[in-house]
Image 1 (cartoon, rainbow, N blue to C red):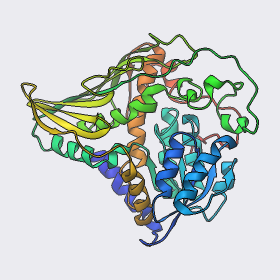
Image 2 (cartoon, rainbow, N blue to C red):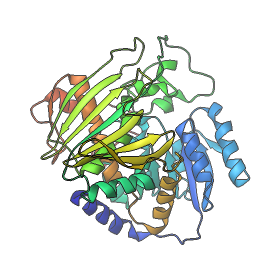
Image 3 (tube, one colour):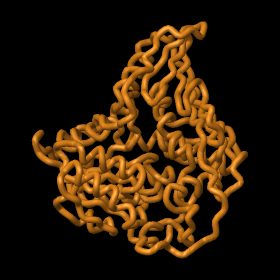
Image 4 (cartoon, rainbow, N blue to C red):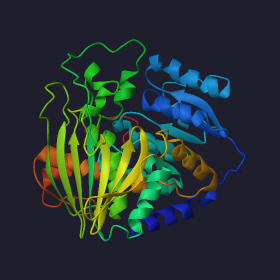
Amino acid sequence: MNRREFVASAAAGAAFSTRAAGAGDKVNVAVIGIRGQGRGLTARFAAQPDVNIVALCDIDPRVYGPAAKLVEQAQGKRPPLVTDLRRVLDDNTVDAVVIATPDHWHAPATILACDAGKDVYVEKPASHNLREGRLMVKAARRNQRIVQLGTQSRSRPSTLRAIEFIRSGRIGRVLMAKAWNVQLREHIGHKPDSPVPGGVEYDTWIGPAPFLPFNENRFHYKWHWHWNFGTGDIGNDGVHQMDIARWALGVELPFEVSGMGRKLFFDDDQQTPDTMTITYNFTDKVLMFEMRIWNSYGMEGQDNGVAVYGTTGMVHIGRWNRKWGYKVYDAKGKLVEDESAGELDNDVAHARNFLDCVKSRKAPHAEIEIGHISSSLCHLGNLVARTGRRIKYDAAVENIPGDAEAARLLGREYRKHWAVPKATA
């Protein structure tokens, strides 16, 4: 943790000291978005002995059964299904919400939840765009709320050990890191617009985003690849590796971002790039991100990973055979330490950290300020891809001077809707 992150966490810890639950108290949790990752989070939180899952919220009743069954198995009864998240936020018995919606709902739902007095665990990336992320930080501070981003490596013991190793100086002065997301994604083809499936609250799903007709290639999971709702795979998966790389380097926001992002392989309805190479320049360090989602052979023995380069060695952090860990190489590239048989990929520690902080009011491992900064790297990479040019970034004011087109993409247009984030949030 660098100085700014330490100060932010210290300030957050002070702000969060106004309400503390006893160690034995139950935390009443509602899960908003219960398909895919949301279903996994439902299982993790329901399994905690000090959690009551009191509501499951989703606009598609078809996804309720599997999630409800997980809660029933863990806690003995099924929570109700709620289709309007405002009903959850108006419920004074709800202490915290877990948000696993599409990206375009992350910031609106988090801000509304903070304003309603709820603590928040929100999936990555923090926001759909960079300006929304700052509004989330402001909402957390204004309401003295615990907000944890779902970048689980911040709580993973093997990653914590790897960061500690890097900070020890045993690979010399750390100058550069490379993060990569190299894995095979699905070719989604082309589909026409179609009627909304029965029971789906599609207008609510659209929320404050500009309205588009229903299309299966813009709905469940496939929304990731459409700019109106998602942030591409750099925001979907790359944010994990970007966060680790930034953490290892001890940096925050760059002064310059360059590179490329485009579709090279997929001839389908995806809008976001399938290929990216992005370079982030900091005062005395460099972070590089590489993405290819059209192959299955990975890189350096991993589909997603991070390499941290020092003057006398390097450290690889990632997952080998579904186990997280790290490997250390000396100045000649020889493997000298192998800590790659770490823990399984279950991510319970991150959920546990959030719950402990709900009770203690201490800042969580991936506090929203930290999460916003890491997510901002993804947004800036997407700006390079969308504009096709180098970006000069003023981190002090989180703006792009002298480039109106790129600066416009720091935020977004909204339709008239009750969940539109207020500019002063």
